[in-house]
Amino acid sequence: MKQARLTASVAAIMAGSAFASSALANEVNIYSARHYDSDEILYQAFTEETGIEVNVLEGDANQLMERMQREGVASPADVMLTVDAGNLWRAEQDGIFQSVNSDVLNERLPESMRHPEGMWFGFSQRARVIYYNRENFDPSQIATYEDLADPQFEGQVCIRSSNNIYNQSLLASLIEHHGEEGAQEWAQGVVNNMARDPEGGDTDQILGVASGECNLAVANHYYYVRLLHSDDAAEREAARKVGVIFPNQDDRGTHVNVGGAGLVANAQNPENGIRFLEFLASDQAQEVLAERNYEFPVVEGVKKNPVLESWGDFAKDDINISILGENNPEAVRIFDRVSWR
Image (cartoon, rainbow, N blue to C red; front, top):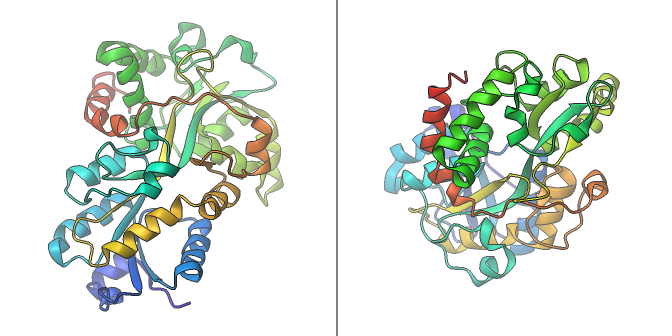
């Protein structure tokens, strides 16, 4: 199968020549901020099932949104793929998406994973969980995100910076549940409890727990599973020193975010774009996301990676993911007010 593979930087130089024939009926053009091997498998499977050729341009979410804004009605993009409801909401605010009314998506995806007006959809779930040091910390001491702000954990928490979209969405969920004042009190409490200034990515927070730099950390679940499957023996050993807590199981459930996509407003191949979105909700695509990238499927009953299966079912916060985007601006302002770097 022939596929266009360009990074956003290279594509900018080539002025979009990869999609010169974007209006052909047997093609779909995807702008993707996801960079996973699992997605290559999805593209191939989609073409094998439908005969529709997949062209992909990759970059980070901001790069791709800026590019589509510049391209305007001339943009060849049919579908935008990205991670986190915050990024999907920003694309929506920029006018990048158009509404889709699909019986397949409405039937296959939970209501919480669908934008109320069909502007975008969540196709994989990412639990933002709490990690603890098995040797130094008693996990019975903590059960909720709110507990992370308890003064008893002063100097014990590792967490990423405030410009990380995952943390912005976590705080956005707390705004929804506790209001702006309550969310700010939580954010200030976490700042007070930080073991060090925020640095690094999600994996670094988990490794910080393993090394004893901190007793608690917050990170998405699949980073931990990647460490367990790492080719590096030291990373596998580090993961074994760390335990996982799914927060808020006795009330609203664990915060989950998404990998998601929407149909681009100026799509030249809208029917093919919708077929691709519907394919992402199929059992086949859901299993690839779960098995290859360790994400939780959004469709009930789909087989998961064995590590995910071993965790069993857990309660998930079922607020509509669009709320995470709507509350994003206030989350950023709260982070600024509490000096969360």
